[in-house]
View (tube, rainbow, N blue to C red):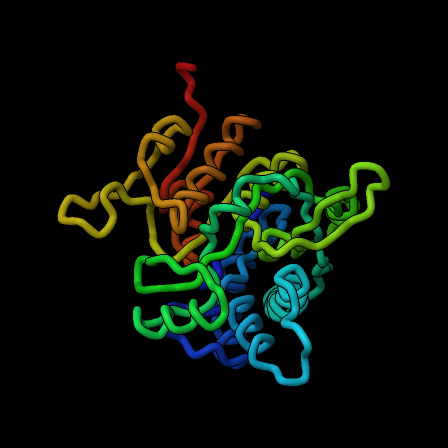
Length: 306
């Protein structure tokens, strides 16, 4: 099978971890062990989040006295693709001796008039206390929102329209290469209507929606969304919390999952299954192999009655 894997940002930084390079390398080494088991049996494309990393770089850029203006989010996203791509490449190289591996900086086309630019929902950076994040919001003009664990910065997250390097990924796969791409949803760009010239935009695209689009374009058989919970839960965090073992796209969409966390994951899985008739699953980072074989996670399947 051809499988597209979407790693959550917690693949490198678990909640509460210090954002040190050694911590991220150790976390991704553990993640690579599970992915290697899949790669021995299937054709693999790996995408990844970058929320903690791009938020950290944005703070450093804001505070750098050598800069006349902070680096924009599109360039910071490109930086995280290089860093995380390198960490994943090293880990997969060690876990899969002899396997060809390529980490590719990719760009994702978005619409300049996407309404998401007026309604930021994408969490980036670390968790702050209410007092500190309000101070940062005043000083830096940030938008803030409440995550499941605390207050964080939110930025625009426009819908991905097209991944510009899809054909390059396809060619690499045809040569037996394991491809790491689409990091952080891809570098967000718009295209001039007359010339086609590309311009970066101040946004972070949701990596799960980009992974779903990439999986569709590559005619993948399976979309695997890995995160820090073992299932999609109805009533998450309440006394009535219960895991969903399987669901159709329609059932997922009726679940009312929040836009800043599980919502994009369920929407990505639903879109892929609807558009392709393939399968998707959402679950824990350390259960990738079990999820593909139906032994863990929430399976998203076509509505056969439809």
